[in-house]
Image 1 (tube, helix red, strand yellow):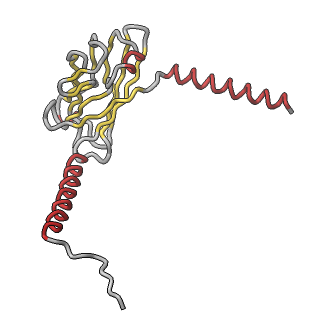
Image 2 (cartoon, helix red, strand yellow):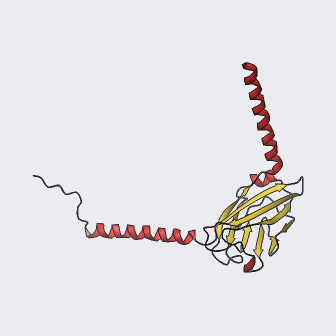
Image 3 (cartoon, helix red, strand yellow):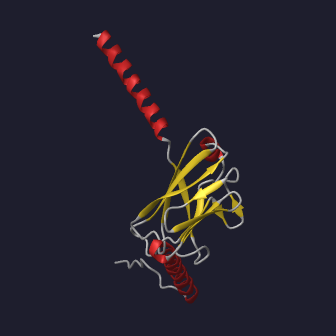
Length: 193
């Protein structure tokens, strides 16, 4: 009978490599776990008007977040401003302030009681600008923003993307077009029978 060795014993070097690899994976998992904690911001924006254009924003903090959102620097990351132009004014809901800063807008809660708590959302943020919604959508990284658990730079921040929501009239127009197309197909089928 022949004996088959399925696993070779590890040499000292192999053991060190295996332990190093396992330690590295554990460190990565720990770093991911720490990163997954904190505020987990989501945001939407819609634009309307014929110039100047009015933009409305809403922000929310995921229910799986472990800290609230106390400030958002919209269309900005350190060293980069992403809006296609400078807004003419900005507004914030009660308990928050809004400040235009170059081609971006800062939204800051006035007190911790006004923060966006995990699982909650808040609308009433906005700004006016000369650039159109199509120019905003075409601007690279225009929705890229940073949320902080307190005031600006109160922590490392969480970068997220504010997504564009089509204005209601665009959705209505698409719905009417789809209905007309369906009616036309139905009529052609009935006529063919």
